[in-house]
Image 1: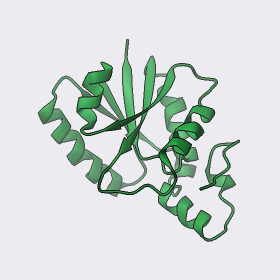
Image 2: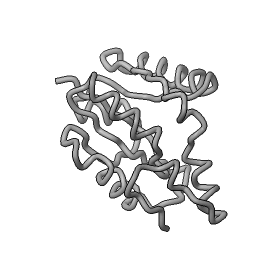
Image 3: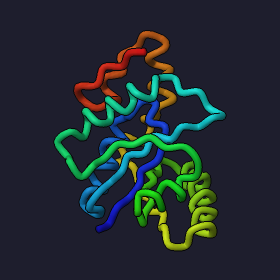
Length: 153
């Protein structure tokens, strides 16, 4: 079975995240959307709410699991018997950042591969941080998040 972990904060989940997972289902048998708990970063939306939103988005896709984890992504992959880390790339800056992490992961765990997928062109500017800013300022976030998700604190 080809199992991939798609790690991130998903604070909140975006149309870009959703589109990437749906495209990746053509490659992987199972995808674990892994919400990372970072002790150095306080999330904006509660982690349980983020998990509920992601589960709602992929409820029609039983091959997508949603989990939370702490620590190194590669250790979580080992625990979940996942041979792949899925990462989305929007820009060249994303590539440079993700390349370094991917290479370090490869040095630590040569048996786990990082797979990069390009974001759909129309979703390139969509980021969780911009969506949070729109939300904080009372703007309409619905064009940038999956259908049926209503952002609340």
